[in-house]
Image (tube, rainbow, N blue to C red):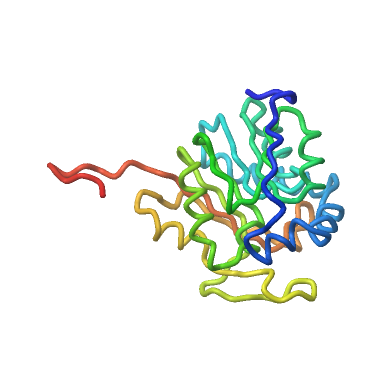
Length: 229
């Protein structure tokens, strides 16, 4: 497990591939980082992941793509204290907060440029895919799949068909669609393990009306001389 002194301090070039990346790397991303923290958010994440993780047993390593300040990883660390944790985040202020967390390897990078050097037992995204330019989603799907040795967990807004939604006065910054369904269609060895919904009116552990999905990679059975394409 990597220690604080071993944390990756790489930084990609200050040229972003999409308007959405520049948006989240800049002042809007800074404001998001400032307002999305606190003990209530951590408690709600604990309750959420306590529902998700029992369906994905045997996790010794987790990669979160788009980790922000690490509230998800903090919750997972409490639930899986022995797991190795790794984070990818584009916003500089959020990265500074991430690097304060113990035993978390941090990559300051764009999700569109990050290349994982290994596989992890679980790859997590929470509130990331909804902010990706839809024309680049396939690249993020491929990253999630390539980095996952077993599970892919996503917590996002759901819509049966792709739609763009105004976000805090900005257009083309939030997109809803069936992200889990698209992953299942793209990769034939993925299967749906579990799914659920977290409601903003939950009296104890509210979330932002998020749908969560646990997907698992499984071997494709060999049939005679047939080989996997």
